[in-house]
Image (tube, rainbow, N blue to C red; front, top):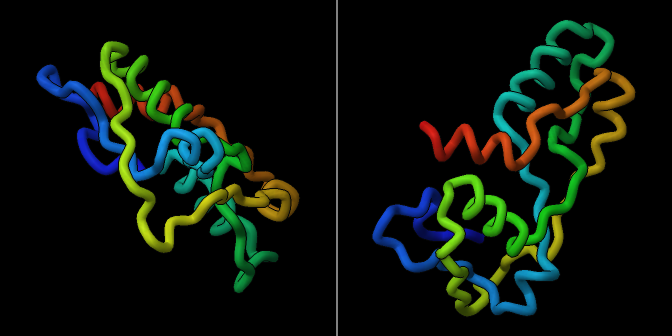
Length: 125
């Protein structure tokens, strides 16, 4: 988990990550942009045949913590920054990627915002 300096400042020398370096290469998450979440909800609202059903709304794409940090550094034009690894927190999930096949099939959900584009919007605002 990136726990400080989500949008690195001019003075920052690193971003703290609560994983040791080997774990950050293996641990992955499924990062989805809020715009895609809104789209999925709108699709569900328009489809009366899915009332009461549960859908995974995500991208279905695994992104390691190292990949996330590298994309964030590049997008924020802070490539001089390095990750500062720390102890893994108790209870941290090792790998979490959603199966979005039901949402794709029944809602015709198709996530559109790429991680790098979503982070670019975040670092600009």
